[in-house]
Length: 294
Image (cartoon, rainbow, N blue to C red; front, side):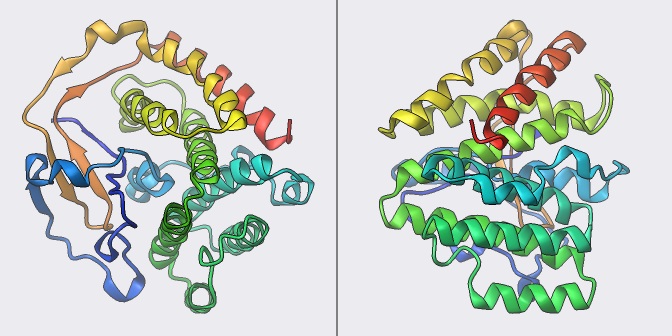
């Protein structure tokens, strides 16, 4: 069974059980439940968090490359709400990548950048004083695993605050920005290798994109609609070999030892080298237009 990772949100704020902190590090034992046991009326949309995308990197041999990230100095040039929200999503993805690979020095600067944009967007609890104190403690103790949890908590805090305060336009932009940056990063981790876990994770983004499009379709905002429209080219590339999808076992969900929900079963996908290269080009162009504040 090939697993793919993305979030399962409810109409209410995410529960504390899905927000691990360094004080409650999950055990190595995986708790598995059938997806059918989750009530339908609690289903929202299956949209990604950056930490889930990069969880695969924590035990990999992938080299860290800061050049794939949005320079923190760019944050000061984002003036509109849309550019701030989209790049808040991008920086949270960068933060997840940095912390997944234990880059302590860069983690501090990206946390500070996310904090600054959260203030601009009036997301008051994304990086609060409690998180800042825990951040400082973990930086001093060189604890990368806890920083990874903190970056996840920062994302969830922003998500829950915007959901509870009916600011779904900002929420949609953050989710889209984070997904685009996450996809751009994993497309640049290594050369195409059909059998690699990274390549499989890229292929799994086809389903994630489908859920992302459903999620954003319920939000009425012209600027969000415009940026989501740019995702059509990515969807087209993913659909090149849709006939090659294969059905696997029953759909299941489980919690990894990192506290990340992993959903498996259903259909699995693969991508060709042509798709890989086209995705790499299209995603980079879209990502660049966002980071340059266009």
